[in-house]
Image (cartoon, rainbow, N blue to C red; front, side, top):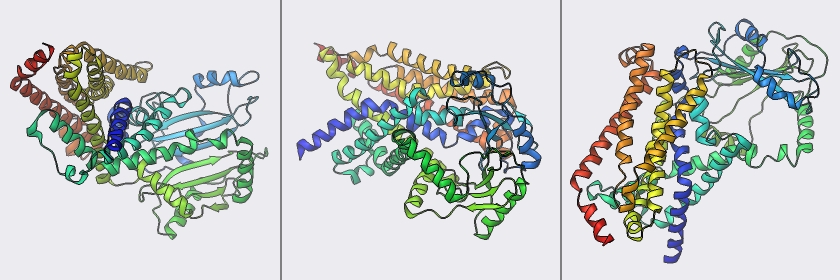
Length: 555
């Protein structure tokens, strides 16, 4: 039994160390993604108004859809996949769609168009737009949505899009995290006692290990659930995409059979047809939802095969009032408004999948639970950070005696991953408030600020890590905490200076999306300042003992 527990300890240590750097990003940016829409509104001042319902199609959406076309860069990227010249304008609409949630003030529109002479006839070219749903005014669509467009994909894909490499790396890390959780439970036989054990007065390794165990045990169900459901969500699309690879022909056959059974055509008929009043279809869908005691908010509106006899309109219910990610779709014939189909209730297996998916993606309205998600994500980050610290503290004096550099390398990477990651997130927010509004490719410059800040944090951590090779602490921890304590409130102050939305105004008006981000920034600054103070006290209290211990072992 002892050898088994030792084997589990080895797995836990090395899986945690090697993959902890990826999991730290998943936890930290996953926590930020819980309030991604609110961060978007902080980062794009023109969107700072109250969330809006799905607007009228006839009055707002139709004009917006009709003026949409793919961007020139999108057209250029499509050219190699087309036989012949590209048209000046794309008129055959595959689909128009609009999506919103109870937290979105602006409305995102998407349009797909058939491409004449495309090498793959089923491939479409896409365009997207952002509008003010109150009056249809087009809004700048080239601004980086820092929350939903950067932090959110960072937590599951590291923004490594080539061959979906980032999604594969995070997925593998999540799978190994499940192994680390199981091995951690095996290692800690007295897990219930560790739930109530934290001895900060002990100092050194003991308090670090206590905090590692405590954060791991308290949030164990959270960690397990989100790693598991994250794998489930991406399994069919990325990890086992049988329908689009080995079973491609069978997939197409299934689509044809499904079209016959549901009445929702898979392809265009090639016969022109008009479009009935879409607002009347939406009203009918809402009436049917109310008849079944369901909330009538529209979250997703899709017009498929626009202008064709096979066209249909699908109205999906917003996920505001429930955990399960269920659309309750109602589908109408586009040319007449006739009801085609009402999605049936899911099977028992489908209900489980929808519940797990919905609980992970949290489209529902429940602010307390959102706060708990943030806490769980941050506890995961603390658990990994303390694991790094324990690994280094346990080995650095031994490595110093043996002249090895392993602890120094791990410590530099740990600093980069923990405090450096926070600095990078603050760097993009500060850049967001400092860069000129009309700067070309402004979003790219914000990304450069993020990666540049993180790279500087890495260089700084490596440069200042020499004391670790002598068994001492890396001063980069304290110095980067000082930088966090400066940058976090600076971002809030810059928001005030550049927009006029200071805390007294946003709190007084109850505009919590912006006020919440500013308050979080101030809280981060205070936490970093307290950490600096604690590290200074530790350095003053033990200036010579660590040095003496290291020098004695060198002798």
